[in-house]
Structures are given as C-alpha cells and as structure tokens.
Length: 486
Image 1 (tube, rainbow, N blue to C red):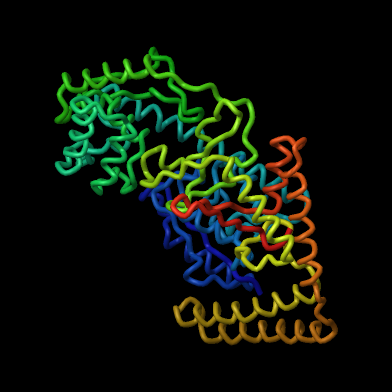
Image 2 (image 1 turned 120 degrees about the vertical axis):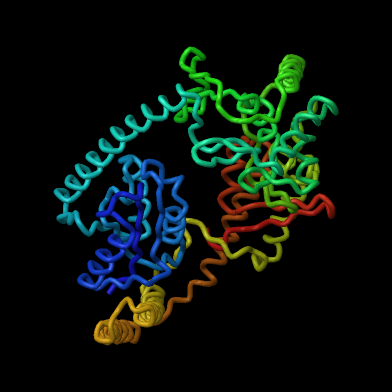
C-alpha cells in the first residue's frame, strides 16, 4: 500500500469534464482501486492557471517541494490527465525525472501507461500532444490580447496605483499616493532608486504584491508609461526578458484616469537618462571569488556578494538585499578579516575533533543506506500510513470496510518488516561518519590555506563541507554551518 498525492488543475471555469470536483472524484476512485491512500492534506489544487509554466503554479511547487524533501511523505502523484501535470514537455521530463530520483511516480487516471520502453514512448506522445495543444491555444490567446491592445485595453494586471474593475483600470487612492511620493522623491528631492526604496521600506509601504521595495521596483514605476495613459503591448520578449525592436511594440492611448502629470513624468525620464550617462561602473571581474555564494547576512539571511576589489587585490562583500534597499543593515566585510576567521574556525574543528555545532542539513551523498536503517525507516513509514488511513476514514474519504482492509494490509507489512529486522544488527557507522567528516574538512582546509590554489579550487573545497557562513557585522563574528555528512 502506498501513500499518494492528488494534483488538480483547471484552466477555465467552463471545462465541466475537468472541473475540480470531477478530478477529485475520479482520482480518489483510482486510488482506492490501486491500494493508494490519499489524505486530504495531500490534495493540491491550482485554479484558473495555465499549465505551460510550472513556476506559476504555487500548489504544484508546494507538492514538488514535499516530494523532494527528505521524508517525501507520499510515493505517487495521481492526476486526471498528464496535461494537468504539465503541458510543456521539457518541464514534464525535468519534473518527472526529479520525482523519480525521490522514488515518487506520476500516474494518470485516464491515460494508463504500459511498463518498459513502450510505456516511455507512449508517455512522450501524450506530452507532445499536450504541448501542441498548449502552443496552439497560446497563439489564439496572443491574437486576442493583441486585439485588446490595439483597442487601447489593458492586458494583465496594472501597476501599483491601479486595480481592474469590469475590465478597466481603476485608481486605488492609497496606492496612488505611494506612486506620487516616488515621483516627487525622485524629481524634487533627487533621491536615487536605492534611497527611495530604503525610505519607502522604513515608512512601512508595500509593493503591489505586499513585498518590500527594491531599487529595480522603483525604477520600473518611474519608467512606466502606463502612469501617463499609455498602453504598451508586446514590448518585452518574455522568454529572454529582453526588449523587442520598437517597431514591434503596440502603443495606444488607454481609456482610464491618470494621476501622474505628463510634465512630472518627463522630468523623471530626463533625470533618469542623465543619471545613466554620468554613471561610471567598475569593470566586472573575470572570475568569481572563492567565497562567492557562501557568506550570508545575519540580519536578513541574504547572500553577501562582492562589492569591490581594492588596489591590493583584496575583495569586500556586501549584503545583496542591502544593495537593493530591502535590508536595513549594512554588512560590508573585507576578506582580510573574513578569511582568517574562516581558517581559524576550520582549525578549531580539526583540533577539537568535534562537529557538534553543525546544522541539521544534509547533502546528496549523506544517506545512511545500511539495510538495517532502511528497514527501520520503512517501519516508521508504516506508522505514518496508519495515521493517513485513519484520517481518510475520519474525513469520510474511505468507508469503515475500506479502513479495516487497509489496516490489515499495513499490519501484514509491519509483521514482515519486523521479521526482517530481527535478522539484522545495526551497523555502528557514527565513528566512521565522524572520521570521514573531519577528513573532508582537513582536505578543504589544506586547499583553502594553500597559496597556489585557484579561486575555483578553494570555492569547490569549501562548498564540499560548508553549507553557509553567517556573518554578524555588529559582533564582527562568523558562524560556520557544516553539512552533517559528506
């Protein structure tokens, strides 16, 4: 008996045959026939969302995250059709392979797949058909949106300061005040994007999505012609995130009220262009520092990135969120202080022979694969499955007879596992693991401290044993977080 998840997705409200209730009903019926328990908490549903991009489906991402977790609480994902899982073949292959590594299968209620290479071929054909349908549908949608833009109508969600009502942008007064402040701070007070973001966050203002302002958010608002009544469509290539040729843009006057004057908007554009021309950017280094991606800000948890390199060749790092205006605490740190502290920390671990302060995090090579441990894990899984069938009975998903039958199956599995456990003795791997960890740390220490090691060699050595290094600017201290096993 397996624990399963049920994924439901509908694109439109008029697809009766693919309605959420219908997908749930047939999914649970399929699960019962195939000895799969699906608790209510493992029913994931995305409504009114396209299947072309998995990143745009929050419940799908939550389901995948659970499946990838160390415990992966379910063994199979049930869908009505494979098109509910993904309509982009490339993404379908990526996610199915990812799930396969976690021993999680994806099955379709209405599209049974034979085993073996024939089954793989049939599944690819289904994916090709789904992607063709999606691309064709996308073309129809694009033509409709282009026509709306030609008529001066808004496609998608309007920017901060507006909301859609009856298909038309309507001013949201409290948001409009934030936008006005941004324009006046930029034009009248001559504050930079960074300073404006920092000030807005300090005042407690939120973006349209409820997040903190960053310098790029401020720049987007100040450069957005929507605020002076212009609808601009087909400006950006969404695949590459690059601007298209202006000849491809559709620019129309929108039929909605504005609250930013054209004069104020033009002043902001003049300042923006002048700032771009006068700004000087330091040349980007041709290599990454070996500490890149390893240092973490103690205030916000963001990564510290290289801010600059002095004439002597030493780099300094700063919190990337602080650079964008969403972190309030500067964490500027020079490698002349950070590197010795890291080496001292590694040396302390090696001298003491202890890794007791490591965090509870593992990497891909740390699973205890002894047969005894695997049997113990499976036995614990039986207890979890028993809780699941109880929940299914209490929630009315299973009948009393179904609950009794599932309980008997689980008891049989439990008895079999106990018999197998009785024939094995646990292997004492703790000391072996500990010695291996210290050996890996010693190897990394030797590479990092060697003057002839390249930046890439140092980075790879450090990343092989360390998950992150938290830097506390206030206390001038670091905290090294090791992987438990390597």
